[in-house]
Length: 301
Image 1 (cartoon, rainbow, N blue to C red):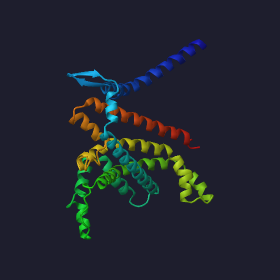
Image 2 (tube, helix red, strand yellow):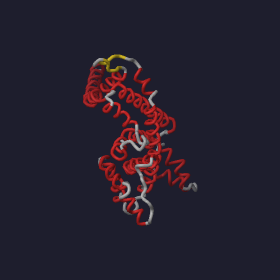
Image 3 (cartoon, helix red, strand yellow):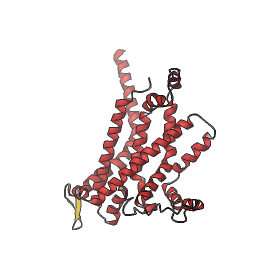
Image 4 (cartoon, rainbow, N blue to C red):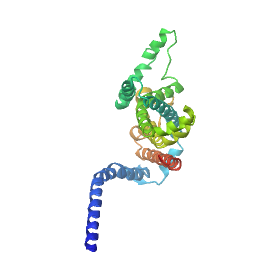
């Protein structure tokens, strides 16, 4: 009887594992098809170069050309500046909005909808709307400033203001989404923690430092991770439609540089080399962020 019972248990375990793998198989198939295979193909192309109409293996020559190209370093600098300031303001304002929304004050539904609507709209629509708002000299904002006798501001002709404008637009686009994420994280924190701290006489800043922020570390890591991707990838749409990567390459972000290499210069090998470099950077940043989370977050006790 014991061997028969063990046999039945093993059969049930096999069925359970087979069912689980069968559920995962479609996702694994699409992962291999749309991520793993293109990644391997991209690595292979980055190590080759067209010569006489054929791809010839050249090793790391394309990577050497990329690292010696001033345009690469300029686009990397622009993307880093854009991403860092975008994350600071988008995550910071999203956290403040989440703290406000969790109190369920007046106009809760309206505020959530108003700030989340930009995220569900396409980036192209948002870019075109802001291009009309900040246009020089007859954009909506400059016309409004003219009422107070303020001279029109050339938002897209000044290198610094052009990059600042793109950061503001990207913050406007993602702030509501980050607020929803932070709101979910805040709702998961037991209110008993805050009640106990109030009995001890803790003020708002002390509760933020010792309760809220430590218990929001997983949400913060997630927001920073996806915001890094947004900063490097979605910035291309804004830079192309609003400033056309100008003025003076001040908004020539990394994705614009890759697009120019691949589709304007038809240098697919170098374009793939840059893509692989950025992929490695993303993996390292994600690894650092999740190591930070594992080290500093110990769960809700």
